[in-house]
Length: 172
Image (cartoon, rainbow, N blue to C red; front, side, top):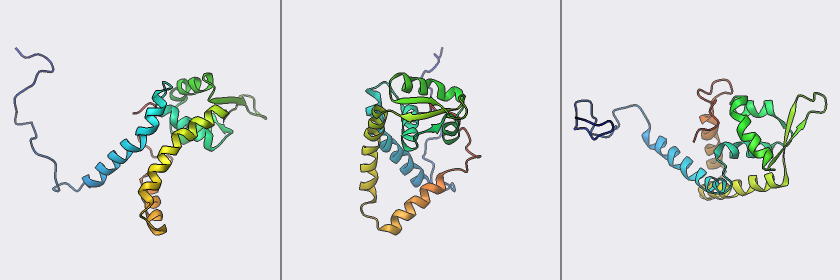
């Protein structure tokens, strides 16, 4: 009798060799992007963990800090998420004193987001190790190399209306 999750013998369906160059896929770049993302997020993840926060909190704090007065609607558009996805994270940040939510001057229903001093300090603490990592990676490049990196990264970004699955703020 076999138990669910038990180790099974090799079958005809089992692939026992690595996918190689026979595919028209640039595995080297894919893996470099995976590893770069893993390491790029590791320092902020450690800092966020001390507050009980995650990457979703990081994204919100980052964009609110970069554009004080950002409306909730604009933040939703920037992050490509739903109100429901944002609500829990934003509530935690407001309740913890990292973000202030202020009614709009003309339309009281509009909510504008501002970092508090505490929120700005957190945003900078998260950005510093990432900035050092970027500076280290760019130090051997000249201006044309830096431009190539920016062009590459910009090319990786989908158009604002075409981000599949862009609705998951809590994604790891």
